[in-house]
Length: 274
Image 1 (cartoon, rainbow, N blue to C red):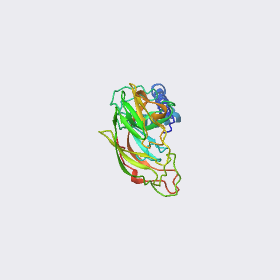
Image 2: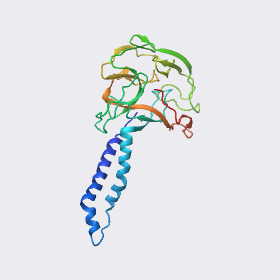
Image 3: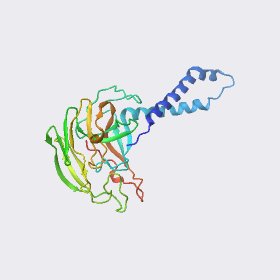
């Protein structure tokens, strides 16, 4: 997920419009009212008074309740597709102040199977979305496309061959699986408490094997599109302070690569499993 600092712009805009409105109310508004000539309210103050409540409401909603994100890659297929617009619960894992990200409430801790948004540890200007696989202290191993947690292999069940969406002539996406084709195998994977779908591509050579122990205060995450995901197997762990929130709901789908409208209303309103 590519991120630009809209939150920082919201903070600045809210502060500036609020200060302009406050300064005018304290220093100049009464003088204008008492003036014989009835000086008109400056345009800058009028705009500040109009936009400040709106900007503040958007900032509070986005920073403390829910934040919208767009899915730009296929790393979470088949659960999330390129073009999905999702809402992320910002208070699940504790409220954080905007810009500084200082946590002000405890909240819950991520559980195995949660789909989380976090600031990418290698470049915190970018937001990533992955599924939590390993909790602090867990021993995670991944060999031959099979996951084990603390020495216990996760149950997997063959679900289907991925059917994709739309026109069979659509271009391939970055996931390596044809969006409309039948090249990838879908499985249901279970942690014991949570079931979710994952995808593998039998047509690709597999090259990531290994095992780790997740350090305290960190999480091991993977994409559901297991053979085509830039995740903890490559760059390491997600620090707890980098958590943004829990993905919860798809509110729109529009794939800009589609030769047609690109809109798929069948995905609107879907909840995101764990």
